[in-house]
Image 1 (cartoon, helix red, strand yellow):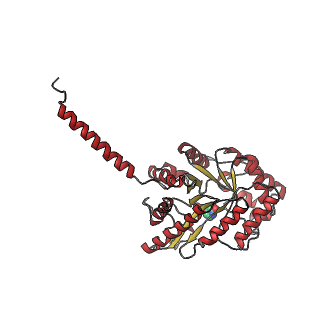
Image 2 (cartoon, rainbow, N blue to C red):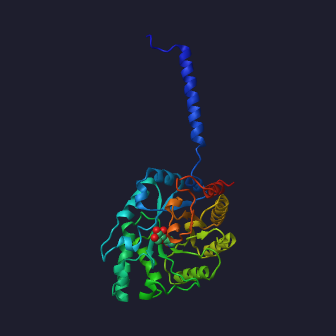
Image 3 (cartoon, protein in one colour):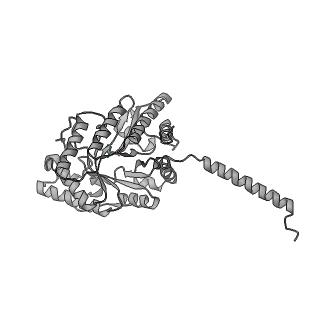
Length: 350
Ligand code: XIL
């Protein structure tokens, strides 16, 4: 009986518990909500490009799940990776990414079925006729889209098929070997393989008003006239300080696509800076991210906003443009950059 608490000790204990609970709730409630949750109330996806090996890093996963609802394999669903030899598939990276998404309640953007880059050597150098290439492509789309049927919500069916003047680019493997019909075939086959996936045409540098973005409109109209299923347009939004697209033009462009019943997704945004990036540069960059996000929120048909990688250490930019970098919304150590806070403020309506 000696060990029993007396009445005042019990009071103390209760008070301590209440105070402790209060402190816990305070800290917990003050924990800032991630972009992903803030975007939910706007029916907006927040996405990023990932590689399968990044999904082994607990710090990467923590940040990813805090802020993002959508992932795009940066390279592991490209033709050269998925079919390294004729008829032989390697789905290891792609499978891992899709399984991760399913286990964590994320959506997936399949990227990309038909592109002239990152094709396997055997395909480029092979002596295939037009008919043979059509059947290789049909089989490929059936196999890949069919494998993930019901598990991949959005597909970039055709990537970067237009030239700067808005015509179907001729410096393109599929155009040279099949002709302009390759685009319609690809959408048709993707739809047959997964009738519920949303199918996108994804394009670079066609966000504002230009011959190229006019070309996107023409392409959509031509596909629709033929009865080919297409749901939306991806605006890659690779841009840089001093040459980002005019938000008013982006808004107009989104609106004219809306008239054609097209959804718009911002699919690969980054804003590159010539190094070294100053604090002022980072503030300017924050403004660009904020303007594009705001434009997407205000458009009635823009429902996803994705960056091309999560932190500056995951960005492709320094590899392709060695004088530039700092293009994403987190520093390499996962600390949010001004761009992150500007996106958060906009999602919070500030
Ligand atoms: C890039 C990847 O980020 C790089 O790692 C790879 O070496 C080349 O491709 N437009 C696209 C993306 O649609 O697939 C490209 O990704 C960037 C430009």
